[in-house]
Amino acid sequence: MPYCRFSFNSCCTAIACAAVLSLGSAYAQLANTTALIGTITDSSGASLPDVAVKAVNTNTNDSYDVKTNQDGNYTIQFIKVGSYKVTATKDGFATMSQENVQIDLNQSVRTNFTLQLGSVSQSIVVTAALPAIATDNAATKETVGARAAIELPLNGRNVLSLATSTPNVQPGLKAANGNPPGEGYIAAGTRQIQNIVTLDGVSIMNNLIMTTPYHPSPDAVQEMEVQTGTYTAQYGGYLGAHLNVVSKSGGNELHGAVYEFLRNDAQRTQLLC
Picture 1 (cartoon, helix red, strand yellow):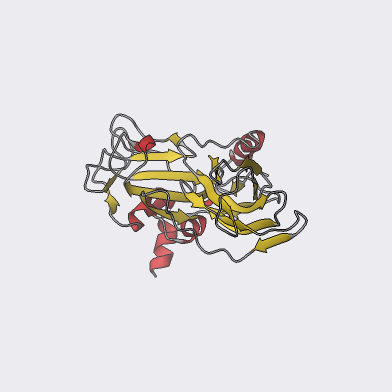
Picture 2 (spheres, one colour):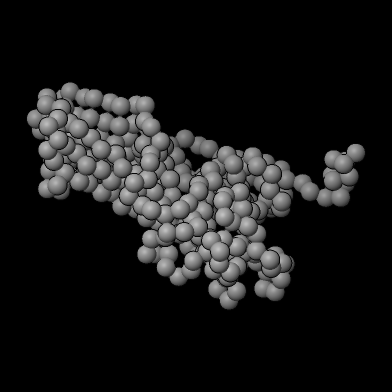
């Protein structure tokens, strides 16, 4: 079920939500290198080829199936952001599963398995997962989650401004209401025009002056990743801040957000009294 939000101050919400629902499971990931990787060995440390690896998204039941190569390695590229259960199966060995494998934007999350001799009907499930340590990507980045996007104070509900809460990023010097309108950031010792901002893998930048005039709703943001150095090859165009925003996707249960946003002189006066 795609994520849908409702706002009392917009008469076009119903039309917008209908358009979102009609998209089904569409999910742009053009500028995303999110991957699930790992190595599978036996109890002696020898690599195990042709092991069936299955990753299932616990929110949507989307599944990905691969097999290990001759070196016992497996890779699932362009996997959606979310929490996964990863299972490894091979004849002659007990089935092993790892639950609560959290994958965030542009992460290469490594999940290794050591299979024990036994039958496939036997199962070993690991439920207490430690936070993933990025050992396969040298990018310098911070992730701002959905809770921060909703609960932290935002001037004008501009979720992109949370980029300045990460190290080495500060607001740009250009006026947001300039011509053309937009805003930028200064990061990694570069100029304000050296930034990239994407929403679900699609650029939302003004290519003339490299600012962004569009602000996604905080209620529709799943997470935002802020990169400030050591990028992968796909980000070779600019050297400053790279803001990658992911919108909330669907799930197996109906979910959404209902809110009313009011900001005017009367309200500000009341708050100051």
